[in-house]
Length: 111
Image 1 (cartoon, one colour):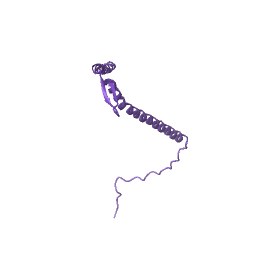
Image 2 (tube, helix red, strand yellow; image 1 turned 45 degrees about the vertical axis):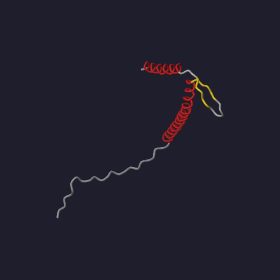
Image 3 (cartoon, helix red, strand yellow; image 1 turned 90 degrees about the vertical axis):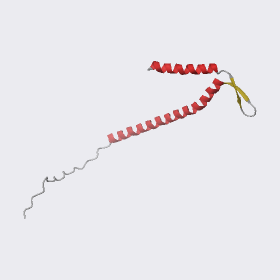
Image 4 (tube, helix red, strand yellow; image 1 turned 60 degrees about the vertical axis):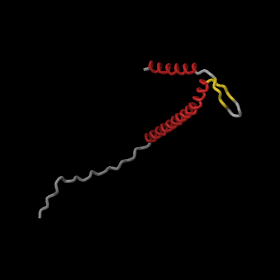
């Protein structure tokens, strides 16, 4: 399975490299007040990818960190409750009398 995973990533990297080599020409980008930037197309696509990827990566790590903090807090609470329950005396249970037995047949009534 590891071989297939590595093969997949090498295939993706090969396609990216082939795209970069065949499209390595400058692209004009019109910026503000007649400012023009000449940028190679693969570099521009890489920058656009990072602009979309990095905020989501930061959001993912933030949610992951918050979840781990919350899980740790809940685990501490559970441990405190267990320790509290282990040290507290057991409540005395009142003894319940046995319920009266119900007869299986009604009693005979004589007239």
